[in-house]
Length: 59
Ligand SMILES: [Zn+2]
Image (cartoon, rainbow, N blue to C red; front, side, top):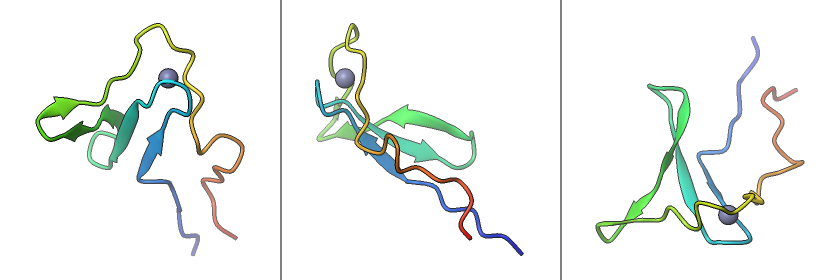
């Protein structure tokens, strides 16, 4: 049996955008904090803090 490990949230190191993982939809959603969307800069080439370390399959 293989356990699938995925990050539950990610944050852009450039503009501060924050996403949370939606398990039901299998997609990232923009995080909402204090009623405000953390959508960051729409023109940003997001640099996610999980880049390079995300391994979907745990050994
Ligand atoms: Zn960004």
